[in-house]
Image 1 (cartoon, rainbow, N blue to C red):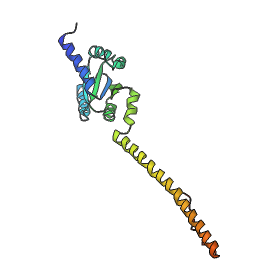
Image 2: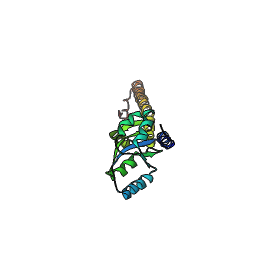
Image 3: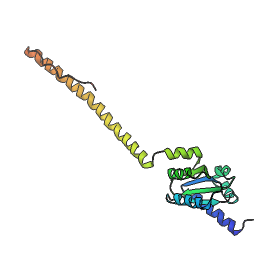
Image 4: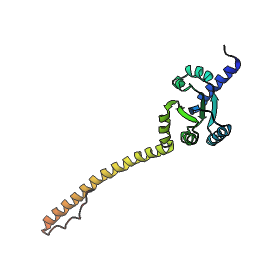
Length: 185
């Protein structure tokens, strides 16, 4: 039977998963307290919080949620690195300097990712950069189509002009002027 404190802790875990876009599950091996303080400081600079969670509290919450596929990660001593934004690159950069904390997996924007998936996610361009590339590609297509359409009509016009000059030269009996050199492009 749950006491009030256990219910409070479970509610806090539910809030962590509900209110954050990035929840990274890490294995936590013991380390000096000053190293923990430094790690928290560097993560907090990027608005990433460190949450120490007991497996006995987290497992029942996760088993009844859409995050139940994260359950296998909650075996040893774990910590959660949480942020309201997906600050994956920054988190990985800080964790590189902390060998006692091993990333196991994460839930980013409601997608559950393995460690490799998190590393791949960090390599993706930002949303703004991807949108800019898409807009650039979309605007390039109409200009290329317009150029192709104009090229045909310009070539046809040049051919008709040459034909008219040849017809006029045949009527007057004078040699036709050579047409300007056409370039195909």
